[in-house]
Amino acid sequence: MSDFDYSRDPDDLYGETKVAVLEIAVRRNGTMSVAGCINDMTYALQMLEEAKDTIRRHHARQVNIIVPANMTDIKVRTP
Image 1 (tube, rainbow, N blue to C red):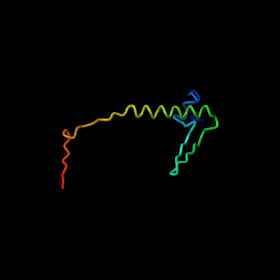
Image 2 (tube, rainbow, N blue to C red):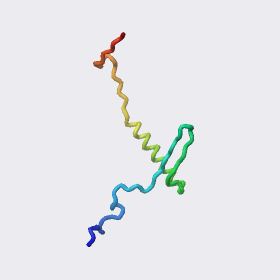
Image 3 (cartoon, rainbow, N blue to C red):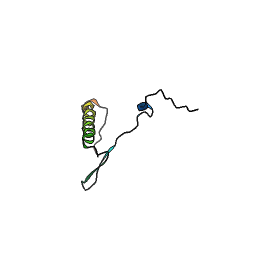
Image 4 (cartoon, rainbow, N blue to C red):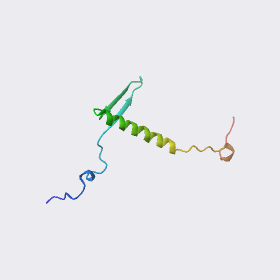
């Protein structure tokens, strides 16, 4: 007898399974290549837009904290 649970949603059987991948590579000489699921142009471009938005949100959350030098306990020795 199988342990397979047929009552589960088929989309949830494998958890976070990758369904599409885009790989962008930039080489030292400046050339760029894109590999992956690029046959469906609309879908590939939307994936890139989502990636851009994710990067923007990531950097928007970062907070730059400036601590004045006189408020630190760093001792500078001069020769």
